[in-house]
Amino acid sequence: MSDSIAAKPAPQYRRIVLKISGEALKEPGSMESISPQIVAQVAQQIKDVHSLGVEVAIVIGGGNIWRGLTASHRGMERTTADYMGMLATVINGMALQSAMEAIGIATRVQTAIPIQSVAEPFIRRRAMRHMDLGRVVIFVAGTGNPFFSTDTAAALRASEIGAEAILKATKVDGIYTADPKKDPTATKYDRITYSEALSKRLQVMDSTAFTLCMDNRVPILVFDLMTPNNIRNAVLGLPVGTLVTAE
Image: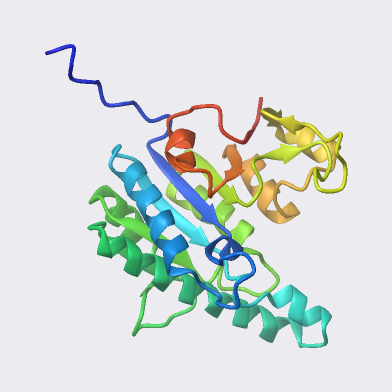
């Protein structure tokens, strides 16, 4: 083989769950809930990872459209507010599916709340078969239950499908000793254990999601979604964000 032909980089993970917050799909300062340009950029990043042969499942939030917990704090009955938030994730999932199929990536949306006209019901074996066939699967509607976050949905789905890591794509570049917006002396962790994160009360995920990951030894990588090539770099094991592991 010619030395001029570069070897294809080897991914660190074979199967991942990519957790994307709904807020990441919104243009800062815009009145629109979903930015087609940002969705297209995210879709392209996912395509780059998919081209490495990585099996990709996505859990997407709905905070750009509706946040059930916030609505409940303002007087709405919590269960109703949470179901509305689940429906918001369906909208985001459909938007991402459209953008991904526009660039040639076969994609399936699976929902925890039956909506036959727009998405498949979540069936674990079917989801895994889709990924075996090279399709990207987007999990929407959280766990299908109120009082559980999409972080918990990501931890649950990752455990169910045997994902090797959760890539939590956010608007910050990792986990810090304190809120860097409030404390200029805060420093970023490159790597931290579950027990350290718990003892230091670091807000990696909500407690239910974090416990699921810890019990099932699913690593969590927290990183900035909008830095170019960050998803690909994370999958390749390059120094991106903060990795939370058992050891």
